[in-house]
Image (cartoon, rainbow, N blue to C red):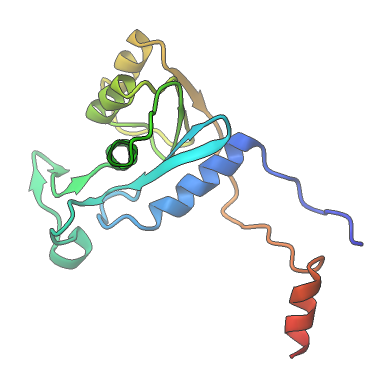
Length: 166
């Protein structure tokens, strides 16, 4: 058996990489953001910035800009919170792994949803988010952006070897 040659990601790196993958579903070209809500190392929900159900997507018809912001989309954090709400899943004492620092409104929503920590690797433009998160004692953990590479090891998977022979 081959010995692992790549470093296993930490839990924070793992969930941030999941958030990066989720962000690929975003439909607003102005920013692709992904959010993963986690409690006890279990994913509760995911969200990305996209249009409301039944509406056109920015990718298809363009952004709807008001005061230099696209108002057509719901932000990733809100979509993750709303997904939990629609399925009856509590977000209390969970962690939000987000590709970007939340905007002011998303920060307030995360606080109100009971999120106790956010983990990010990219900042957003100057907002009041950090002030609101600080008031609510929500910890902000800034990490370097995890690798964009997926370390998928087919070498040690016997079925994969059989598949390659065919």
